[in-house]
Length: 195
Image 1 (cartoon, rainbow, N blue to C red):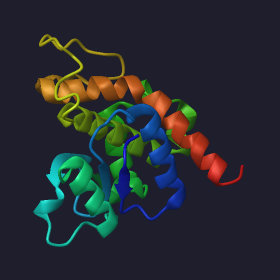
Image 2: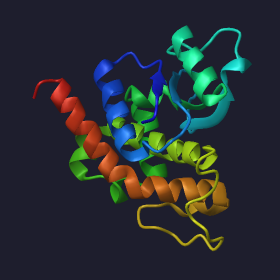
Image 3: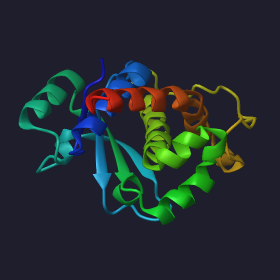
């Protein structure tokens, strides 16, 4: 079971992320830290890095001293660090519209999801892509799911993802899992909202 830490304050969103991530990426070895970042704007959707708690004098919000001890003891100090844009998650219309055309939502999500849950579509899209990068960098996996350099297009995937194998592999893996991930997110949010 993967340890998930975050600075996300919305409990129902964080719980939904944890639930969907456990189901879809539960085989990740290192903990995952998800940060909502105000510095990411425009077309910078999300970023992935593998970090160490030893890189910090002061830990990021959401990683407690107790978490640090667990990460140091069990994971040699390493964790996956994912930054996501606050503007897009909060429903910034310009950003959502840019994201929708960039990620080709119409090939991934239902019309209802796009119209009623645009921020959730964005979150699922970017987070699954960055989680695939975490999967690639995880010591247990350390590699690509796609073993071919010819990089054929996959339905719902823009040709721009073929610029290198690292990005292509992350997008292929994410494209295959997105519909299931957003379904898990919506179910969990509905349950926590008491619907």
